[in-house]
Image (cartoon, rainbow, N blue to C red; front, top):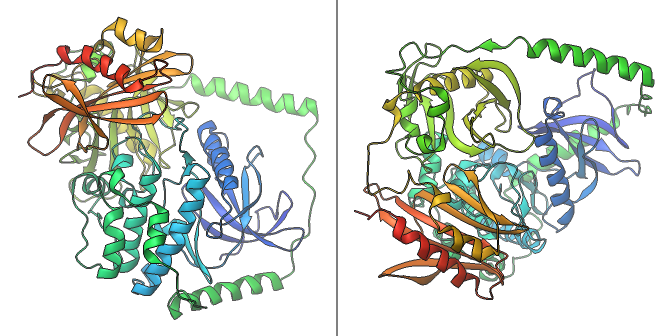
Length: 610
């Protein structure tokens, strides 16, 4: 708990603000006092995100999700105003350190406390999933250890189980690498089973002090989550039997929260669920709160009256003039000194057909600019259109992801007032750091982006420099994958199904590009999606015969929905190239058979696997 800055307001909505509690990437949390005397934790969106429509929408969704959950192991929402000048969310204040703080300061929890933690988290997930939500960010810093059990907080990236809406494009990854599921890390379909994977990782961390997939960098951790088995060598046997089933790569093999509770049985009566040192920290926080309340409380002051209408228009005029002046001063960002042999104009370098041939881990592999130094790509990227880079000399602050042909999030993009290779750079801050992107000339709903979540140094300068170098490099043939006639990665997903068959499955509809390797047919609210993928392939559904000795997996998510996935070929590194066709709102009575018909029109167009 920290004192407030003297310049800070002491009133937020109906709550008098007493002290600062903490700060995260999206906002800060302060301690407030309600008019009826109850203490509240008030979360505020950071000022620099207030005018970012993407972050405001994400905050609205957090408010909606938080209000749907009111179980004993979550912090109940009391009030919120997502439309305020500075959006805020007030929930019941509970004292207690986060699981991350407790383990870092006091060491791993004993077996009995971890079992109590597992029971509380399973109960919380039961309520969350009962509200048709997936939390998607269950991690130690989002779990408070209170005097009577754990509390799950922060629904900032939760979403409805049946809601297809995403704040980022298809395949974008949001969450905490060490505690997300393989399907979330790979940009796949995230269900309630994803939270159970996170639960398993949290229990391992609580029992040992570190997660089961922790690597030396975020990229390595993500690779471990998708490709490797969890490290459970130091996990006590009583906890391993709980955590290991949750960490199954196949979501269908993970237990439900109810099954975890059944396995644990009735918890023994105990007034102190945690080790004495944790309860001592809880008592210390209680004392700090009482001390803060003993000081003179700030007087309530009504909010200032809005400015007169003429003043409002005068201010607006100044802002418009300032924006106009800024937009005329666009700075050219310098490209690499030695990019290789350039050949293609930018309009050809950024076509979909060309980008499908590009290996993103070749684009910035090496030393191209003095400010970035020598960049090293990850060894085995999770997705074929993305690659993590870090500075190979051990320097701080250089750790970002290059993304090719992903969708642009609605409302998140602003002007950077910079250019590179004749392309106007755009700015996005969804990563929490600073991102730089350009829109594809022929498909402006897609982008090439440097996703820079790090805050060290000047994040925007790093992102702009890396993107400028990437654009120059994309004009060379040196970044293309070696020709491979057996690969499906260069194929256009919109051209794969027979047009009449695809339209027939939806009773109409035309194809539209959704991402570099995803095409979608839409007819009203009904959709048909074709995706070409490369990653770890895990069979997650019922086997379906596709003909010619080929089988795939089908999963039905409703009476008119079905998805069929099949492996094209296994690769030497253990990953696979595979395809997926999903239909939603199909009216023929047997959606899987309709999807199977679409698959049948695709198979003859695929290269022969080797």
